[in-house]
Length: 199
Image (cartoon, rainbow, N blue to C red; front, side, top):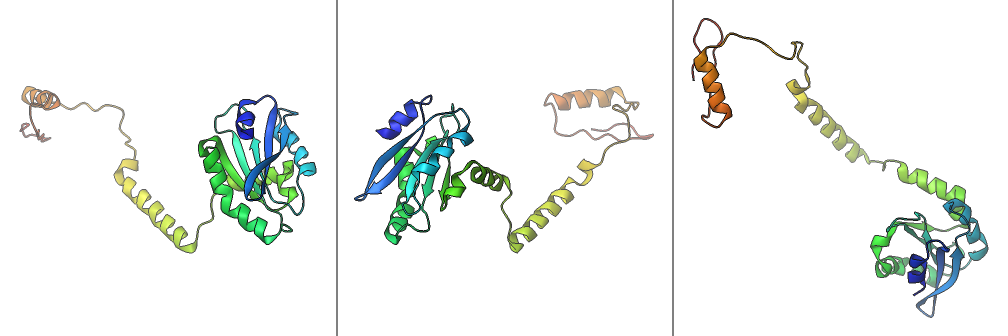
């Protein structure tokens, strides 16, 4: 119910802080929308998050998008082992139950610093990087690149002749080509030189 209110209040709410209590999800805090700048509103999280308490943070990052939410699983290192296991095992269920199509991304954080504007920008930069390849994947990529380059063959070569070429052609050859273009044949063989065109 709290998430539905969040979804239906794009001008009033930035997010929702959810904790687990007696093995049930409990909405603890509504995070207000104080600015149109997502990074500016992240400052609110510092006062809400505890160094020893895990939480789910559902944030509206992309204001007018249907998939504009981000699901953050905050599990600090000082949280007890039971909390860590409970949050790690239920985070995908939470997103699925709320509607995975609403969440553009998910994030796992262990420190408050990761959820500051600078921490979020680091996350964004990391997401923009290409995934590192293993040695085997690099070799395979090299083979694929070489195959792609080799398959271009003559198609990659450009002609140094102008856009058209004029050759003398008999009327019979011209008619055979026209018939071919309209489906009236399967093959036209043209011979250049002193020989006549054959089909």
